[in-house]
Image (cartoon, rainbow, N blue to C red; front, side):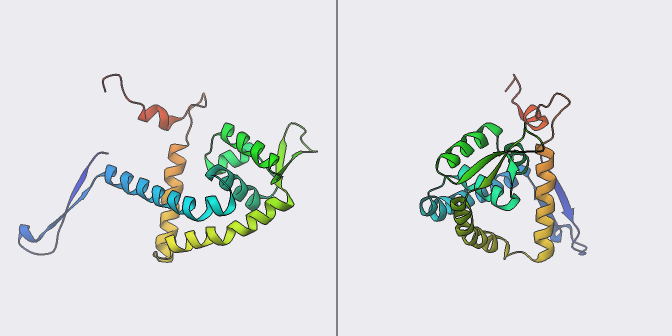
Length: 181
């Protein structure tokens, strides 16, 4: 889909009174990227220096805090972060004493992670700031709009995280520039 144009009948007998709705998905993509940039800026200004965390630190701490004992691959599934980035982040957080790695007694190959006491304190301190961002962002929507938006995000996220039979990203394959470009 590149462009959709729809004539909206105003009920008037005059064609000039009818409106035309134009949808260009690139405009929507640009608005989405602008939203991302605004959220990133809020994180940078309000959280990064105050809590001495980068965005990956923040995301891992928030996921471990919410999920409880978990593993890096589970964080990757929930966040979409590359496992290598999660591994590096967890090593840094472990060195800083914010997480504790454990060997799962039921599955010795699974290495899980939990927040340390300091990590839990940091998680608890970051929750109010995260809540303020979420509340400010979504307070402008009615409940049904927020639920619809969440469903749309889930649909889009599911689409871009699909993989083929060999485990390759269908999204990356479909969006790769052609040789002619």
